[in-house]
Image (cartoon, rainbow, N blue to C red; front, side, top):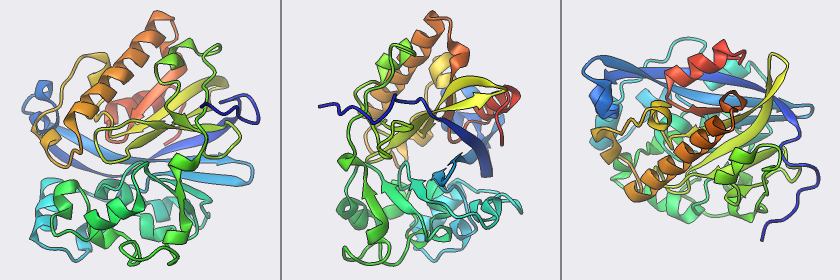
Length: 310
């Protein structure tokens, strides 16, 4: 059952910045079959959202421990396959510059999304739809890097018992009410209506189930201002890696075989987002929604050119 929110959904406008925390370069064919042999940049963005009295971070990106944490040889292979460059001033802890985070929205547990997790000890962590027990088993597995996980990036008590310091900060996305989207105002949102959670209870932000890439994978949908104009932003994490998967029919390359939880579900999520983009275009409202994949330099550049902050 969809529970009504305490005010009109997505009526609150967030201050929003899209931060690049580092990147790696790889041959285009590694990620997308249509990208060719030239090298492409793959960034690891995180989102900083602010309202009066509330600071929210979407993912934590890269941090130096991505390179440094002790791990078996499989982890070394994972780091070698995605050789991240992290420049001074890029990490979450540096960008926050002393600001405290109230809520951390963790789209999924992969290493390029959790690198700064240990640098934010104060925030409530909205974990993916998957259970704590499931990720606990994955983290302590010798094959964790094959699932995109580096155990050294997590608090020591993650593979521990409920009630330990990190565990008490975890919040269950599944426990939040299902949120009805304002499809009367934004008709194209009907493509994702019914699969969103109102984690803050005020309709200001919807966590969107985007399954397939990782267990419990989700994105975040909210409203912001670009040069005084209201637009929607969907942070889709790794549901797609490049916006051309949605606009030009690009398909993933061999990298999609690494660390994916369910390729069939991932393909259906991509089709769902394609329908969303197509619906917005058909309504003449393509510029009213920006879908930002974590690793897409092209989408980030277009968003900043429209007035977004990085």
